[in-house]
Image 1 (spheres, rainbow over the protein chains, first blue to last red):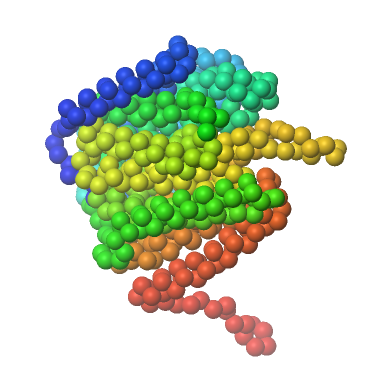
Image 2 (image 1 turned 60 degrees about the horizontal axis):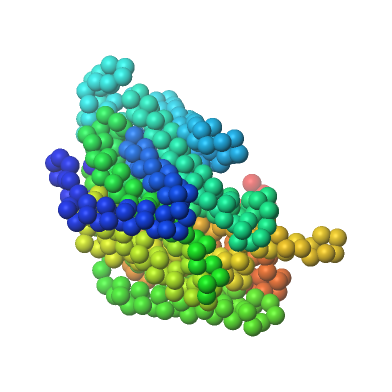
Length: 283
Length: 283
């Protein structure tokens, strides 16, 4: 079920077309080659980091329990908003947490980003359930599985007729936190790779110290990370088409398509972002 | 349960709006280039008008795309538009006088690739996907570029990252007091993203009329322009910023009045609320 009609829902997962696969491989190879030509090994490593970050974002989005408009009326499980909104919230919270920890090194910054994204989703999921249970009087019941895979709670007794389930079962809560963590991790990885490249290039181009160009480098890396994050999140949302309950939902099996699409989109957007200063001053 | 996205038929054909939007925004962007020959950037407000032209075109494109029912909500289309647009806009900005053209080409490439991925890898299989995402990326890029130009008076990259600060009577160049270094680009990003998706998101449903939707898009654009005009006081000469502010307010008032008139036209009934009259002699 989708909130807004949606393209025809066919059984199973349709694999990408041959043209899609060929296009994906060609574009990634071109992007990697360009990265090596423009910035040698540093560019190659940065672009691979961006591609991994984008793929993590797309994978993470599939964990998040998205209920859409029906969830607002208690007619489907999940958080009552769209995929793009939730992913943006979790990813940007992760990005802020990661950017704050950027001077402490890659490992700590990435971990901080993951915790930021996961924490936002944990708070959101908990508050959603408090409102469902104590505000609306809705018990948590999944419509896609009979038993919670983690706690073993059964659902059919609690599911209202004519709905696809309601509330936020524990497995969806766990999925939300994992999704937020992966999204924050991916977003932070994109940010750090871009920041590293800009901090190396900008002082040379502008003839200034690293401290002087810091605001520009941070702002550029941040806005590009946000842009790439949203492109990846929306492609993942198109893959899900509407609502998903979490990792136990049959739609979760579609994730390989989104990972391919996001990897290619990140590679293309990433090479534009990495090559930002190549044309500066040419015209 | 499915909520059908209903789109009103008739109105101006989409291709005509596209040509007007594209040509109008490009002409407006190039008019801001004349700032180079003036003492102060008095023509900066044309950047905002370029964004408004692009937003009107964007609302029609979103209407065209979302009539297929993506299942992800209308805002996701606005997010992918600005997400891919901001990358193209900042890349294009490094090419000096060619900025609007390069921005357009880079945005079209990123958008077309995102569209192909959505259709052939994620398997949305929507006929209008490739053309719509191409248009949306171009619109997002022009919106960002236009609003940034309005804020700092130029569409050249060095103008966006350098500002001046007066300290004890000395004027110094700094990277912090600039549109990108100050992080204003993030505010502009969201102003564009909200403006582009709100119009169709608010007007969709039975009885949707094209002129009303597009008038709301223009109103949202002028509302964003007002905010950017206030921001521009920090970066450009006061009189130029004041001119931009007055033009934005006039534009907003006109489009708001028109939108209310069109809403009254399309409404089944309209109750003009009046203030409660105090009973004579006290209650």
